[in-house]
Every structure is written in C-alpha cells, then in structure tokens.
Length: 430
Image (cartoon, rainbow, N blue to C red; front, side):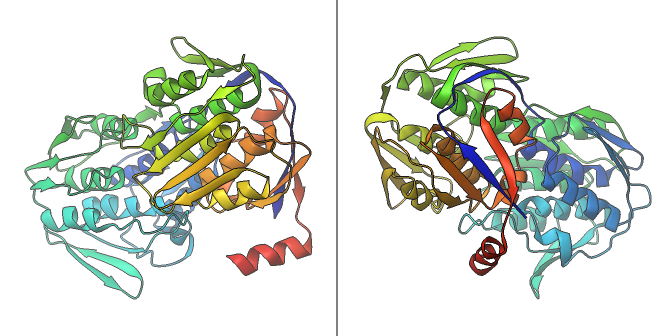
C-alpha cells in the first residue's frame, strides 16, 4: 500500500494530456457483453476500475486483451454466471453488468455494488426500468437477481435524472422486443458515448443527449471498434490545479463544451482561461481570487465530481464561498481533512461554507473517496510544507498516471510505501 507525498508551493507550467473518460469506460466495457463478436475500445484510461471490469468479464468467460490504452473483448463464449461476490463489490459501476447481462442472457445475479461511499445512492430507478421491460428483480442475500422470460419495450419515466439508470436501461433495452422510450433521461456526454458504441454494434438509438431517448430493440449486436471520449472530470481537475498554481498549463485532449460550467466559474474567480479546438489553457495571473457560490446540477450544470477539487481552490478566494451539492448530500468528507490543513470551512446541510484566503499547511490527510482524494492533491500543491495523502487506492480508481502527469508540469509529488502503523490505521477506519 502506498501514500502520496506532495511538497507544496511549486509553480506549474507545461502540458497535461487528458485520458479517456472514466465514467464512459465503466459503462462501455460491460456493453461489450451484448455483442456476438469482438469489440475493441481505444483510448481507455489506465485506472483500477478498468482493470476490475476486465477481471469480471474474464470471470464470465470473455476473452480479454488489455494492451496500452486499447481493450479487445471477445464476448462470444460468455455465460450467464452469477457474480454475487468478489471484484464486483469493488466498484459502483459494476451495476452496468445488470443491464448488459439482462439484455443478453435475460437473467443476471450481481452483488450490490461498492465504490466510493457517498451516502445513499439507491438503484431504484434502475430496477424500475428493468421491471418495466419485463424482468423480475429481487434482493437475495446482498445480491440483485434479475430474471425475464423475454424483454419487451416500454415507456419509462425516470423520477430522478440518473446517469446510471439511463445507461443501464439502454443496455437492457437494445435487445428487447419493440420500442423503449426513456423520459427524463440524463444528458451527460458519457451517455452519448455509450449510445455511439451501441449504435456501432447495430443498435437503433435516437435522442441520446436529450431528455427523451428512443430505442428500437434488435435481435443481435455485432462487434465494432470505438474510441472513448476525453475525461471531462480529469480535465476539470487539472484546470483547477492550474488555477491554483499554474503559470500557464495547457490541458490537451479535451472537449471544451463539456467544461463550460467550470470555465465560467474559474473566470468568475479571476482565472485566465483560453479555449482552443481541443485544448484549454489555464493560468493564474492574479494573487487574489474572488469568492464564488457553486451549486452542483445534472449536466450541463456544474458537475458534482468537481465540487470537491474546486472547494480546495476556494480556500484561496477572498470572502465567503458556498458550495451546495444537490446530487450527493454526503459528499463533504474532504472538509474535515482540509481543516487539518488549516482551511476555514464548515458543513451546513447540503452545503460547505468556505472562508478565505487561508494559508494551507501540509499535514497527514486521508482520501475517503475518489474526488475527495483529488481535492487533497489540489490542497497539497498549494500548501506550505509536505502533505501526506493516505487512501491512494481511491485516487487510482479514476486518475490515470496522476503522479507522472503532475511531475511533468513541475509538481514535486511522489509515492511512498505505507508503514505498518499507517496500514493498520487505514484498516481500522475502513
């Protein structure tokens, strides 16, 4: 087990290459189950969630070759093997195996998913969609059992806009008989990416990226080659890093339209942001940043996955900033860790209140989830002295080659092995 060591105060300059989208990858890989021949996915991020999903596909009989950033999946020999335990528990996105296996085999047994602990994130909308398509769904001994004689298209209205439910219903519906209409669907770019893959496999999908998606089921899907979109959350995190300590950092391989809400807030704070075709340059040319208020919303609103990294930056803004998370009310575990670094902030209900500017001090802190880890990295880069970040496994779930990319623009960041006391500390708190 390792920890991150960060010596703060170093100015950053250079280019960072953004990897493929983590939130796309974790849905695209299960989608390959639906094909009858080889699926190749390019530009995948080298993260632990991808490797976990590869393990799971091998477990059910898939032939998987993962080289560099390209994954080749031959699903032709896959079987409807139950996955109640093991790697399936490691990540939240394992629930996409439900929709994919239900679509192909008309049944599935999937252990209740794990991943980051962000408070209650029910899968009731997923279940509502599966039942509308004709499946029976039961929870037996901590696993979800899905069974259907056949799947039939249906009109499904999501009570809550949910990326996971939208994608999961799409995965099941592409092999159902007749037309499925998903209303109040999520509009995130990752949904368009999954729909593009499925369409390349022979699915008939219209409306992805709008709040109404229409799917006409087909009897079978074939293999294809697909290149994943850039990771807007990774890109946004590095934009925040550049806003914190950047002389001029160029973030390469981005779709600027996916980052408009963050770009607007950084400019509001006084950060210089220049937009190019597939690049964004960010630099901090002022000493004093302006405070701003943030409210997370479903896309195209401000992403919940970026509120934690931005909270760290807001410690350097003059005045009071309020960050309200309407998506995950429990996504504030990083606040206590930032306070260890002398940040002035508190949590009230679904909001964090940040007072600045504050001189952050290096400290030993712990990442409790993926984006909390990113927030501590941002804070460590700004702090005086050395910051030690435990819980690196959370960060590795979503950021490919984080240390190497930050070193490439001048950050003094490295990994060290944990000592026995630190290992025991992590075990005791998990």
